[in-house]
Image (cartoon, rainbow, N blue to C red; front, side, top):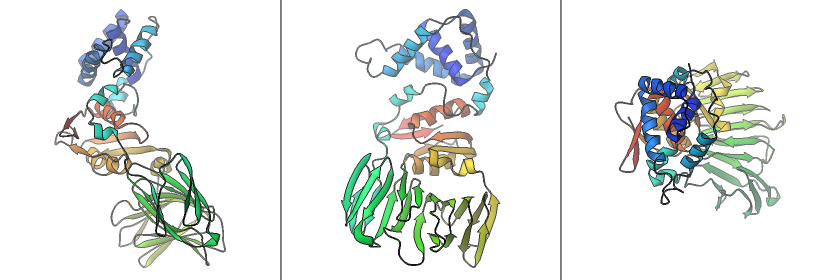
Length: 368
């Protein structure tokens, strides 16, 4: 009999609530004897649910109460579906399954208060906070329209005032430029652009990562300046990534671009990415799902080290810093991190798929 993570959750809740069948009880016992991580989760969940009915903690454990309600409503004759527990343990079950509410009791308060840095726009000498769901802001003669993490603007009688958009760690933001070009900015990134394009070219500067959908205008080529390189465009869609110091990567999704770096230049074809590390340009095909997954908030990884996730990925995308203990160092992670979900989701996934647990010491989360 095989199971997925959700099946295991149902078994645990059913056993704790007393609605488990004899057959299911035997299945759960076998799973707990084979997988220490499942027994550990069972014991922790049992302790948490044991206090749900006390008045002082009822609200605190609202999610636990909901689980019990679900367990009591479940049909006793329902058979657990045949799926693979092995797949879940080895990492195929991605960011789902067993509940992670118990982790909220272990995460320090400051971790829960994420993203205290705001998306910021500087127009000339005017600084504007764009951290609003929907708002109109007057700044230096422009009317800024911020709606659902996207900026559009009007005004200023055609003045080409320079602006800088800064997107901090843990955030993302879109900008519709004067010509209709859409720039989707990833976390820890910066965009410099004129509020109004003038002259024979349209030029902007990017550091970090961004996805660009360039408005077609053959008479005014679009130029994206990157560290030690630049990209010439007519009308296209592509991703730029300058996160790693000394490395620039341009991935072409649609159309055609010319990348210039040092003394080299190359015309990219769709589906290829050009990388420049200070010596020569290198071209390779790229996986669009992996490279562009950040746009949907889902970060896809295949065999990335836990150390790199803690050192680069989580600080950049979630603005969270972890410490890797020697026992967890060097382990690999394959799966998806949903940047729109709490850190507990990822931590629980690590426990299930990699048997990496965590603890908090002096307000800092450690993986072990």
